[in-house]
Image (cartoon, rainbow, N blue to C red; front, side, top):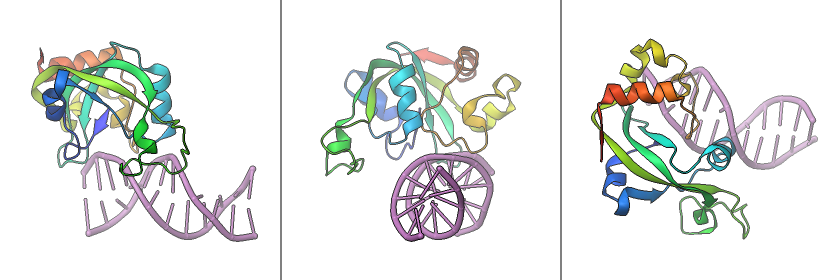
Length: 151
DNA sequence: GCCAACGTTGGC
DNA sequence: GCCAACGTTGGC
């Protein structure tokens, strides 16, 4: 899951109560469908910091609660307000809980150097989706590269 | 700051 | 339903 750290970072997640937050504000149908249909409680999540000079996988989390309606779509004061969602939010969010910190965040440069990660979705050109699938092998490789430590 | 790659909008 | 124009994302 991508996030801009100036908006919400992995460190913010670690500091949140219960190390858990609502991952609100996803406003793309493909990303929504992934969260709604594929995200199961306990699934592992890579938290990726985008839009930096050096983008990184910043930490590891898990799905703490499966998809449920995202009320920010109905909140006029929210920056995620969606005026087409009249009364019913068809957007969803999940709860995400930080589970591991990385001794060293894994940079995009590092990711690109790894032959085992060549197919990784987030490395493909034009991959803008804010939620993207990762394979078990890719996930484990990144855990090792970052020297993941349980929180 | 540039620009490629998408996604969305709206006229027709 | 097509497609041009526009907006956004995000790597570089």
